[in-house]
Amino acid sequence: MSRLYPFILNMWIMGKDEAYVNNALAKVYITAVERDAILATPQVA
Image 1 (tube, rainbow, N blue to C red):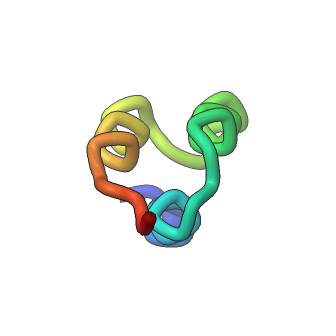
Image 2: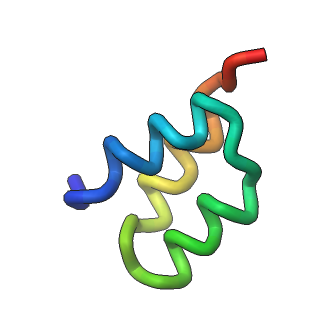
């Protein structure tokens, strides 16, 4: 697991958009598999 995966996951859960997660992938902060797992996680309403 990438070091920033838990942080980016929590940011996603709290309402960041998909572009934020894809940007983390582009900067190689997370892997494509981690990105897919994050995007499959539900967000807070």
